Image (tube, rainbow, N blue to C red; front, side):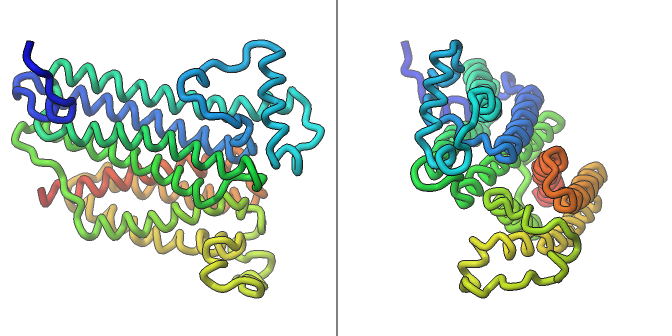
Amino acid sequence: MAHSPSIANDVATPPARHARPAAIANWLLAVAALIVVMVVVGGITRLTESGLSITEWKPLTGIIPPLNAEQWQAEFDNYKRIPEYQQLNQGMTLAGFQAIFFWEYLHRLLGRVIGVAFAVPLLWFAAKRAIPRGYGWRLVALLALGGLQGAIGWWMVTSGLVERTDVSHFRLAVHLLTALLILAGLIWTALDLRDLARDTHARPARLTGTAALVSLVLFVQLLFGAFVAGLNAGLVTNEWPLMNGRFIPEGMFQFRSFGDALFNDPYLIHFVHRWWAWVTVAALVVLARLAKRAGDRRASIAIHTTFGIQILLGIATVMTDVNIVLATLHQLFGALVVASVAWGAHSVGRQRA
């Protein structure tokens, strides 16, 4: 029997007659939809302060939740040992613990589902030699990034188990932004494959300079959005456009340097997030117009629609003292903005490919 090469090499160069780019594209878009759901559940987990309810990382056995009263009490006892319970939730009932446990368990379960939903079809397409030439390495890279995301999630959780009563907002930002990077990568690859399905001579789209700049502007907005979530900075005011009666909140730099305040002060982080949003809007309008000029009007409409709704949801979230439904929708549309930007950037890149 001949020696079998590695997956990355083997799947990258199948005979053209076996390639199934359309089927692979549909599979990648389905996984992207699961990641959007994952981002939403992650948002609910954060908003309900549920993220530290499971204090151990068991990648395989953790799929089985507590099944009897003894197991539930053991999980609850583990939670009682961490600062969040000792300083904030003293006296919580077992029923209250089960409520927060649910969201963290669901979040981790979805992560496992996504891993299986990506790895198993990838192996199947590889075995059938159905992955077009040059795409094997990209799919393996996305799989590896997904595995890394699981490790990042636990790295984030560990920051709140010893000395803090919540997770590090820096680690939370890494966790969220990695999820959105995977989402964009899935959509970009799926669109490349759809082009290939329509035209066997189609080349992968390129990230243009303008699209890269727009992505950088959006990255800053998403980064500060993650900081807002991690520091509960949405609660520092329920006013818009003013913050507690002032355009620039009072005392932002009274006890901190600018550099320290920019990354740690809830007032300044909230201020940057709400006003950098308009810089982001301007950048997205430019990208949408370029996508329309490139012949993809639907991508342009998607960009305008998602950022328009996102801005309204952001304002409504602040003015309702972070209503959980509105805040969750705000996180959902944040993911949809990323998806639409990946679509628009791909359209612009396709024009120059």
